[in-house]
Image (cartoon, rainbow over all chains, first blue to last red; front, side, top):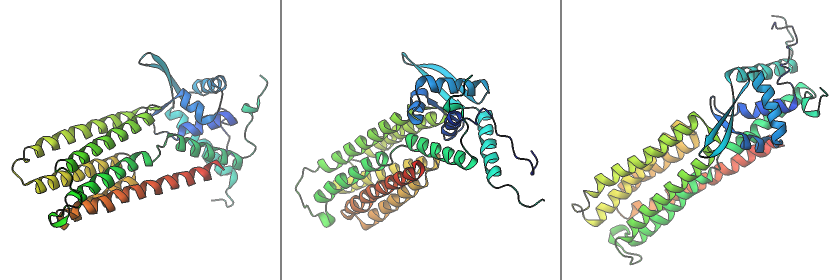
Length: 106
Length: 218
């Protein structure tokens, strides 16, 4: 991406709901995961809606969804992958670049 | 596919950045434990435990309230155990929502507490018959505070929590000052400056967290 071009915004993240999901997950420390219900509580989304968006993010390789068991109760854990974190950082950098376009040519 | 409202991009870049900030603040608030959960139990334990201690073992062998000789130290140990158990439970409750390296760190830290306390108790109990009551109790109280302080400072270092770290540097200094001030004064200083300090800092951190959350959510 050169300095003069308007940066492309990642279409996977560039949807309100998924941007919210990725933003929330980016708060966790790298390689920590959060349980699905807790993520749902934070985002105030329905389980179905959140699942749909997580699947899309998973298909892009941005999040990892792990199904596990805690005792007898199944638990679903969600975490941002390294690739997802990079995509999120690129996305926020692109937004900032859009807001303050370089005024002088180097 | 018909785009739903969810699929629509945010209106403009500035709006997107605000959305990101809001979401991050909301998440941080949700997964950050209430700081009072870690400071208040210890604060109350110190104020109450060392307060009673002072009333029974005042400076210059004064007895303000004639309690049984065994009561102050037993109460103090009990309060410390209760505060430790509460903060352990409180920390575990939060980490149930998060899995990964943070959890393992928490578990190892919890085990370190029990092992360190067991070691301290084993060593100090051998001195009980060698020292006069007054010196023995101050030895217990002083070492317990130093050890608790060391654990809390390590916790501050592990979680990169400057507030916790400096709060405990403060209580550790207060402990040393108290030991030098001598028997009787030690407990009063710890109750007021140590316990009171923890309650105060816990409240301050809580207010700050609430203010930060309020800004992020607006």
